[in-house]
Image 1 (cartoon, rainbow, N blue to C red):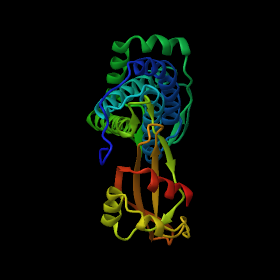
Image 2 (image 1 turned 135 degrees about the vertical axis):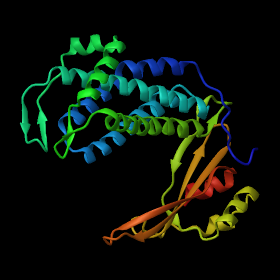
Image 3 (image 1 turned 180 degrees about the horizontal axis):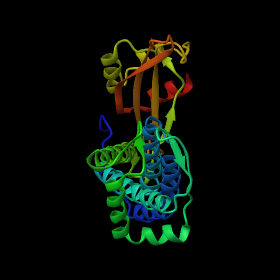
Length: 292
């Protein structure tokens, strides 16, 4: 048995169907929500986090619905699918946002902060989606004149291109990274199914990290017998074991140490340190962990 799990690089062509379904259903819905949030929340700092959230949602949909159900165990392909999904989701967002610009009504607020009332016309959005030349032409016009500002100054031109580029990089990076990670997870080629992922209750903090890796490779149970669940995962430093089980009889294990610390406000935070990822573990050690 290999010491560590390595993805086979294979995939099922059914992932294309799941990707098309995500493109037809999930991405337009996410684009709609994102466009309205960006339009009606006039705070650029909040919008920054909304953009991150949008990227996570797109990446999550692709990871769960396309990579997992499509049985993609090729990390590079997962990354490419994520990038394609990010581009399409952002395109839907742009078509919807442009329609909001076209249907803008009354504005409320001051020259420093305010909102403009608008709602989309679905038939108009539908026609825009199938006319990318119009969408990109309107994007160019918006960039030339601007539709929003910072501290009373309208944002347009090169500065606006930079902001849009940052937005694209954020969404694309997150949307590509999550499927990349998902495609790396253990998959049983013999049973044609993903391993069952079991996150175990918190165990005591692992001081000698190299030793526990050596013990796992050697099938030595001594350190596993010493593991204790007498730890408060909300306040104490601890370790997190994630077991991957398969009907094929092979098991893999990932271990993270969580080190507690106080931030500047006195709140408890945890630094995460990955000790090992997807290391092969025998049935005896797996049973010890599950029985604790």
